Length: 134
Image 1 (cartoon, rainbow, N blue to C red):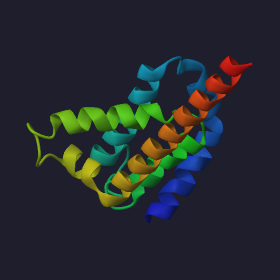
Image 2: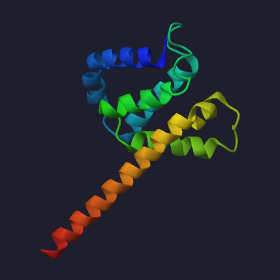
Image 3: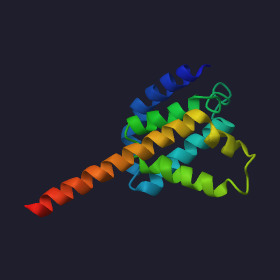
């Protein structure tokens, strides 16, 4: 199965599961758990047909992006996951989890999320400044 086939299947499944996942995902910790579940699937696979696809570049990046686009995880969830990976980097630099984290497409997506988050913060600060002036 190709990465694009995987994402197609993920989107189809999310059509059914998104409403349920959105209801049980009450806070950032739940959203981070969704990212970690995707990571676990990428590393060990949920079934034999898909078990190695998410670990191949750029599939995991697209899994993260699909979860974000489906509004199952906010920008902060993958960034918290990334922060945990960075903290673990010194102890387990050669692990499969670290290899997944260090994939360039994954890093590119995380960088995009960070920039997007910073832009939102700047916009919110400007709005706060505008409302304080009035």
